[in-house]
Length: 490
Image (cartoon, rainbow, N blue to C red; front, top):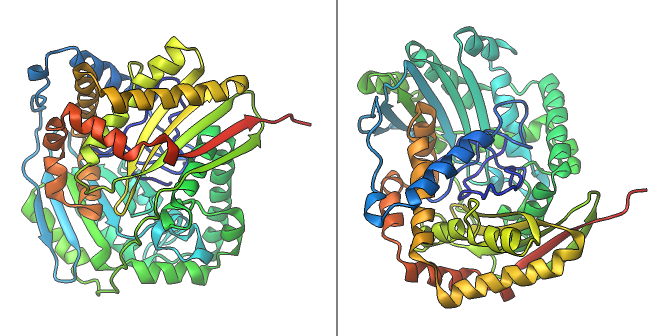
C-alpha cells in the first residue's frame, strides 16, 4: 500500500483514487490521508465512497449555518483522555491514548523512512519492503503473523509514503501486549524470505498495472513528476517495473538495516488500555532495540516552473490537469491553501465544479487536492472532459482562478470549506484507528502540538488570506499542465 497526506479530494464525480499511489486511513490536520488502499491496494481495505459522501453532506449542512454556529463538535461517547508521550533512551517515541468507545486497541508503528529516502537505482524499495514485513520474522515463521492476528479477530494494514511508512494493527484490547511485541519484532527481525520477495514482487507489479489503468492516477503522477522534476517527491512510490525487477534481497535488506532503527520509530497505541501500563509494555518491547543511524533531511524543492505535455492513452475522455508547488506541512500559509483547495474543488458546491461542470457543461468531473509533505507541497486540479472541450475547459479553469485572485472568495465559501475540514476531523476522531493515525502522522512528519492547534489555525484564516494564497501559489503562468487525450485503439 502507498499513502500520503492529501488535503481532501473533491468527490463531484471524480475517481477518489487520486494518484493511485496514496492510500491510508484518513487523517486530520492540513491534509487527509486517503482511506486504505485504492489502486495501490494489495487486497486490504478500500476507500468508502459512502463515508466520503456523508462527510460532504454534513459539512454542507453545517456551512448553511451562521459563522458563530460552526464551532467545535460536541464530545462523543468514550471521549479520549490526553495523550501520554514518552521517548525511550534508544530514541523510540511512544504515544498512548486511552479511548474507550469500543473494547479494541489500535497499534501503529510509524517509521521515518519512505520513498524520499531511496537512492535513484532502488526506486520502489520502501514500498516493496512494506509488503514484506508482516511475512515472517526470525521467531515467527511465514504465515504465523497473519494467523496470530486473524485468530483473535484482528486486522493489519500498512502504507508507504514519500516521508514515512506505517504498520497498523487493530486488536481486542486484551491483546495490546502481544501487538506491541509483534510490531517490535517485525521492526527489526523480518527475514525477507526469497520466496516471499518473488510473491510480493508479483503483487506490486499488479498494483502498477492497476494504477496505469486509472487515468486519474496517470495524470496525477505525471503532474507530480513535472512539478518536482528530479526531487524525490517526484518519484513514483511503487517504483517502475524495471527497478522492481532489479531489486535483489540484499538491496531490500540494506534499506531495512539502514532506515529501520529505534530513532526512526514512533509507536502509537490508542484504545481501551491503561496508559501507564501500556507504556511499560512498550519499554520492554522497544527499549531493548539498539540505536541505528540518523536520517538525512529531505532536499529543498526545485524552483516553480511552467511545464506542458500531452499524452495519448486508450479511453473516451480527455483529462486535464494543472499543478503547482505549494507550501510544506509546517508553513504558515498551509491553512489558507488547505481552505483554498476546498473552495475550488471539494464537493458539489465547489467553485470549479459549479463553473466547469454545472454551468458550462465542459467537464463531467472536477477535483482539487493539496498534498502537504514534510519538505514541500503540491496542489493539483484535474478535470475529466470531452476530447473536444480541452481548450475551453482550460480557459474556463484559468478564468475562475484569476477571478478568485482578483475578487476573493465569499464568506459562505469559506464557511463551507471550514465545515468540510471540521467534518473530516470529527469523523477521524471517532475511532481508535483514526486517532492513532492522526497522532502517528503528526509525530512523524511535524509535531503533535501543531496537529492539535491546526483546526484553530484553520478557523483563524481570513477571506483576504485565502485570496492572497491563490495569488501567491496558483499562478496559471507557472502551472505544470498535463493533458491525457484518447488515442485510437488498433
